[in-house]
Length: 416
Image (cartoon, rainbow, N blue to C red; front, top):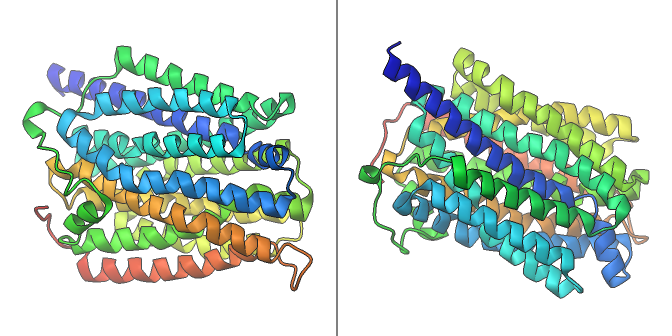
């Protein structure tokens, strides 16, 4: 390797490390508040756990609606103005917003905070675009996996620390989340380099920088649309864990905030292993198509176990199996980035984020509603019902993914 090549490789690693750090800090901030959210809602409103779960679902709904509409905008703005300013601005705004939520005196103010978080929380579009900017196609699966591992690491430390800090008060984790986001913005200001050259930027168009417009562009690439459809069902299935994990743990096993935080952290550790270390070698050995399909398939038995587990130990078994699904998403990202041109990577990532956000709009009310319906004194008592629904949804997503891979796996890149 020449001296210039070695220098470029070191620069790429440096940028990826910094982007991974920003993603880590962003996700850690989200994870910090998860263990205390049920009790914060109950202390604000005086409702029981089943009603608190429903209110928590609507808080997630508000967050997801904003992400759904603004993720394509963030992606489009990063295609126009570069990744660096978009990442730093959104991270700084998140820090201010967490401080607002730490102060929020009523549930209404908490909703306002979650709305702002949704607008500014679409950093993944710009972060993932950095990988497409500077990483060669043959190495993107590993790089996307590393970025996913950084996010998982945020879930390892975030909920664990959040559970500990929650012992000092429900609002303390929000203050810590604010500090993390502001520190990330400060570090990025001094050391993060721009990854998108001016020559590869394009004009911003609101007609394309919206959920309908960005996804409409992807319709021109059948494999990308197949992956996006599969992601829709897979992410909708995952909403059972994101929406009712804390509530079902309290209802079924009497989990404390510390146990909630530790179980989420354990799942994060396993995701780090799957995404941060396993996905690269697996994609290199078996190919992105096979890894995506096999990874998604692991989720079905996992959800069945989570639905029927008689104790915390079996819940952990289900989590271990479910962590294997972590390799599917980076593998699909690898495939999709190869199918769109270089100046549309932000748009692609915005479309991916919009699809994921759409599931977060529908998922929380759906999953918390199912949980509430099967966790009260009326009718059948089955608080694991949301996980069973997830197994069905994931089965549909897997069928779509397999069919798309079989029909369009060999297509060439298309202009969007």
